[in-house]
Image (cartoon, rainbow, N blue to C red; front, top):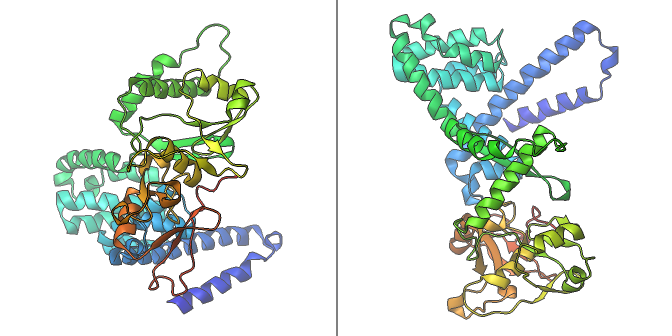
Length: 416
């Protein structure tokens, strides 16, 4: 298979530099059709490989928490895309063969294949595998005319065409399946942008959507005739207000032994002179005005910093890594330090590099932030954790994974 894929890659590479302007309109359309079919056929091959890799547990064996996380790091995908890839591979694995054949033949797109597979699963539950096979045949024909969203709506009444005697009963089953799909597909993605900004995307199920609207709608009305904010800006500010209210309750779960809080690092002299910029514990820089505004409603948590940003002295009072020492650890590591992991500090625990029971001290030089999965993985595997010459954590993989055992670092939390 690898040789065939290599030849196919070479053939495609030869087309990349071909001049499109010399093609006739007919040939341009044919090119678009051909590349689309090729994309679907390649997707069928990739999905089969993903399913096999997932079944073997390769990703977990190599230190990832899941196949989706491994794919994110390997292919530089965002997490929702990687999860959809793994989910579709699993769905097609148990779908009627006609779905995989249609995708491999390039007659349906990946998203159409997902819709057909989901619909076939619902039909199989209510009417049996034979009827599900008939439904796949009809849906593949419809896929020549309709996009995935229309195809899904039409699929809710597919039994009217292939098994009308059980259509009403199946319609109820379809509603339940849609509710299950809604629960499965719920997600919120938080993507970092420049300047410390975040981009929120996601899909809420009906209950969460109602809760969000109930919380922010009262806060999104214009504050008066002079309120020039756009509707989107008002919703943004309403969400921030809800978060502030939640933090003030004191009822949120602790994060690494500390109450949920926003930590800003700045110099005391700069703060008192109203000139000092600051930085959030998750990296972004803040203007002096913002630092002063936050300081009005917060306890001052000083950290003594060296010229290169190393934490020189935060003290030590107990075995557990909390308080000032944890804040210093967050400033240094930025999140889970295991290579390829992007989990933020609030998901992480502090790990003693040399275990406390073995005489290891509770100090910055003997600690590293690890998420729950990688904390367990490091304890039960042959990975070696150490601090590099620059005081940053690095991880030496076991020889079976990398015979040269070259140290690896996490680059997701790199600070500028």
